[in-house]
Image (cartoon, rainbow, N blue to C red; front, side, top):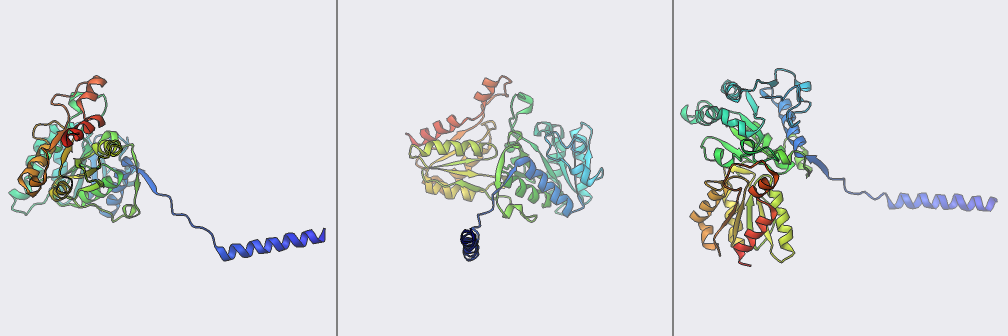
Length: 360
């Protein structure tokens, strides 16, 4: 009995000694996952805390926590003076927000959907976009217009438009369209800090999608500069240029095509105006083929502008075939689901256009 106890104690001492010599294995910390909705909320929270001139106004943004819960918790934290519920009058509260920007505040003006920004387009274009120029640079307009843009699901013609081309057409505005949670946080913080009016185009169907957040993006000082696209997937066969929700579609299409030996380079524009033409041209010079993908209508769209810029620049001579556009169908959005699905770009449409462009 005594011998067995001594043996046990000796083995225990040896085990402890071995642990001390070896040390514990340290695994890498788990990546932080964050939904796009929460990334937007975090960006506003950090900027409201950082700068007392920042405030949020819009329909149901305060006590209801936002129609899509993007402003959840902000009213309780910052109160009535900085998180302001407005009547249903886009022209009215957009005007109030622009006036506040003239006076030196930094408003975030939320449209429940950008379709409703049509009610306020005179304020957005004539009051916000043009004032800095018309005042010879004396009056800046630091304001962010944000909210969901483009098609959602089952909301028909008056709630499904993409306004990237509408607002991207107008000098005096900066227009951004995030895809991932990291895009959303970094671009929104840049937008709030910018001294110019920024149209910030979110997507309702992306709010609940989770993405990994890098360590850098978790910093309160993390921002993403405007006019800088991001290559989400490297490739050599063909360039896919897209923004917002359709980055996911392009990555999914690229995964399918890779099994057939077609390596797609996927560019996430992030910024519509200014447009990162240099990134697009560099990619096209490498792949010699171009497909643009967007949910908006084809005429005078973002894809049309990209094709024109490529044609006018040095990358045109590197194209081995004409550029192709994948867009929404040129009709008001139908309500019926099967018609809606056929009115928007699907993964199969991207694959078809890639193969057509490559002639395979």
